[in-house]
Length: 395
Image (cartoon, one colour):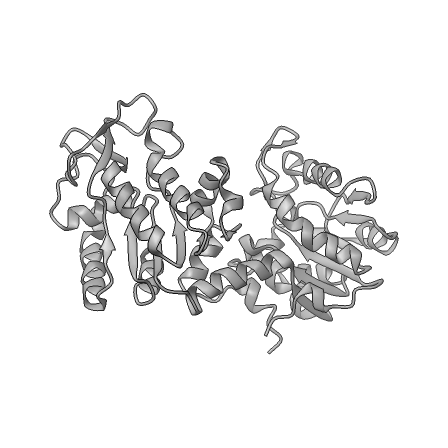
């Protein structure tokens, strides 16, 4: 069982919230504040409940204390989003006597942001002494960083046993409820859509979902490994040659389960994966020998749209093509549009590039849930136990 922040009494308690503020920066400016905005409901709830709020996050992969990866621009953006009622204080480290004093001196409405956790190698090493130092700052531990829940680091797992109370934040709650619902109690028909470049990245997800779904739609570069395994000409398309037998095995398993794996029946092809390449449609599922598949074609878009329209649960991970280039983005856009148009279904995006695509296309708010975790979402959908969630369990 997991408790949530809104079940706690926080008045006067030092409330350590692990957030995911690993956001893109351009110089000293945050270029995408989605992850900061996603954390606001939990931060505001902790403040409303009277907690002394301490926020902790990593940013990038620094080797030691790197000023370029300071959380200073993040703290500034957070202050803008929280508004003038709340002062945001950035500490110069995440542990030590100075930090302890700043936390102790916190006044009502103030928020402390600890400096980048990964300035200390002990964070990723899940070092016990470092975990205890972080825990010494807190009376209550709250994890709202689903994107790092698949990592057993000091701030996501190691420190939790050393804090009196623990709970999940509101974003973590949403992730667990939506992704957990997809796996445990999906309303039928249940359709999963997988794309992206590699079958090898999605093997465990396919194996986990095949017995649960009514159809599995496969697009993106990974589709060409499946097509080649069936003997279809794929030209210069990206193929994992060492995974052809695996693709055959997965299709055989789907056949036994009577679960259709729906592959592209036509493509948008080009000469290279750049915007310089011309784009043309193929009449069927074969790719000309001197070309490569870079998006699903119009017949496939219509086929996928029909499956999505008839579904009551849809989960999607991985784009249908090279969506960063407009001429190869229509397949990804069509899947996003079909999901947004199906108002009767639970529609879940499993993080990563699919999440980036729906944000870019302005459709994120038309879907039931867009996960903030790429790797964490995949591991959750694989049915794996995530250390950051496991650490929150009370029994």
